[in-house]
Length: 510
Image 1 (cartoon, rainbow, N blue to C red):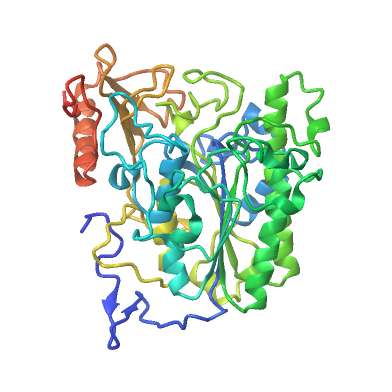
Image 2 (tube, rainbow, N blue to C red):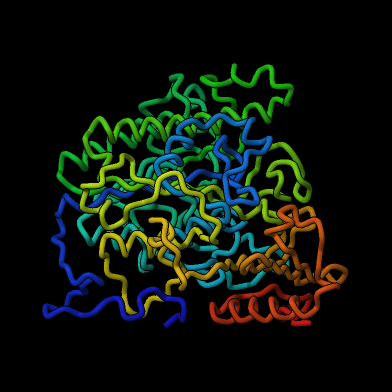
C-alpha cells in the first residue's frame, strides 16, 4: 500500500462484509441527507486569473496584485468570503493529467496520464515514455464518481471531460461512474463557444448534447449552466444527493469573446485576445453565481459543498511561456516548468452557511481564510470520500491527503507540504522532459534531456518568480531535494523519457 494512503487504519470490514467508514456509521444508498458535492473545475485558469487575491503578504493577509484588478469575478469573491482559499494549490501543467488525478486521487506519475490526450494519436512525443497512459481512464478504474454512486449519489458530469481519446472507454464519462453526461467527450476544447455556430458542430471539436441551443445566442458557458440546473433539479426531485462535476470548457482557447461582458474591457488598452479571455473569466464567474443562487432557491445550499479549482496554470494571452506576464508575480504559464504552469486557484466553501447543518458540523469550513499550506488536485478524492464515508478499496493507493483540518481552520501536523510535478514529454519554448518537486518553501526542478541546464533550485516562498537559481550555491539543499524527488518518483513507479536508443533516462542526484 502507498505509504501516503489515507486508508491506513481507516476502513474495516463490517459483519455483513461491507466496508464501514472511520465513524463506524452505515448509510443507506438513498439517504438524501448526505451533502451534495460540486466540483467546479475551470479549464486553463491560473492562480492570478481572478479578482480574488490568492497570494499573501508577509503577515499572511491576502495581497492584491495588478492582475486581480484586471479581472472581474464577484462570485468567486463571494465564495471566498464564505470559505477557505489556498495560495499554494497545485495541479499538473496540462489538463488531462489533472482531470484523471481528480477522478482517481492519484498523482499523474502513478496513473501515468502525464500529458494531455490527443484525440486521434498517441502524443507521448519523440522521447516520451513509450508506455505512458494515453488511453486514460477505463471502466475498471476506481473513480470518485463511482465511489459516490455506490453511496446513492446522482453523479452528474457537465462540460469538458478529456479523460480518454476517441473510441476508448475514457471518451464517455458514463463509463467512469457518472449517471449523466452533458457535453463531455474526448475533445479538449470546443470548436466554438457560440450557439450560432452550433458549438463547433461542423469542426473536429464539436461539443455534444447541446442541439437545443443550436442557432441561438446562448454562449457555451451559459448553456452548460442551464443544463447543470436541470440535472440538479432531477436529483432533488428524486430525493438523491448529487455530485456535480461542473467542468467548464472556459477559459480554454479559442478565445471567443463572450458578448455579455465585452463592454467591460473595451477601453482597457489590452489586445482583443486578452479582452476575450477576460470575458471568458467573467462568464465562468457568472455561472458560479448562478449555480449558487439556484442552490439557494431550491433550498439545498446549506447542504451543498463547493470545491472551486483550475486544471492547470493560466493560458491568458498576456505573456510568454517563460516570462512574468500571464501569471505575475509567478513566472510562466500553462505547459511550462515554472510555478505559473502548475499553481491554480482553489476555494472550498458551503454554498450557504448554516452551523446547525449536520454536515457543516462535521466540516465547519472557516470563512474568509487564506491558507499557505500546499494542496493538490488529487486531494479532493480522499477529502470528499472521508466526508461522506465512502469506502475505498483497501489495496488502492491514494496520493492525496485529507484537507479537512486545514479547511476548518486547524493546523494539521501530519499534513505534508509537498507536490510532485512529472512531465516526461516535449512541450515547447524549452519546457521539455522535466520533473519538479515542491517541499516546504523549496522547489527543485530536473530537466532530463537538457545538459546545459539540468538542475534548478528555488526558494519559491521568497522568490515566487523563480528569478534566482540557487542550485550552484546551495549544493547540499539541492542534493536533499533531488533525493526526496527521486524517492517520490520511485514510490509512484514513474515512467521516464528515453534517449535516442530507447533507454530510460532517469534523474541523477548530484
